[in-house]
Length: 196
Image (cartoon, rainbow, N blue to C red; front, side, top):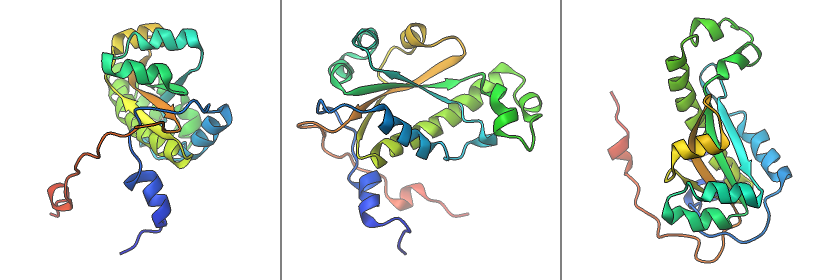
């Protein structure tokens, strides 16, 4: 069976796409980020809750503040990437539900009145949106370098507030020289897919 997406697009988004570790100095523009968001915002989430929040780190001062919270091996690439994004989950996403889920605006209070429930839903659905964001970066012809090697509490204190939980940091740009590590193996179909 063939997929509806042509082979070149499949390669761009998946087969040839890799986590970049070096980048050129070509800037990533606000227009590119807008185009990425305008595509990936259509990815599904439960109750259309859309809890992902993205903080773009552009200034040298903010970059310096972020780099100190990255794991040692992630510091050089975070310092040199054209754009860095902090992806977080908005634990107060339910406030937007009357607008985002208008056919059942009561969902805000019926399902998400309790903070622990919201935190779990926000983390799960924002992580799903983070995956869409990475695919969107690739669709823009850019490379993404998602990282979870960081001081999460430090990043939250430095850039966010108590209502936003950091999920990852993503370096974004055109891949530079020696950008790729060798591709790691993937699990086979039969190791992942079960029919019952």
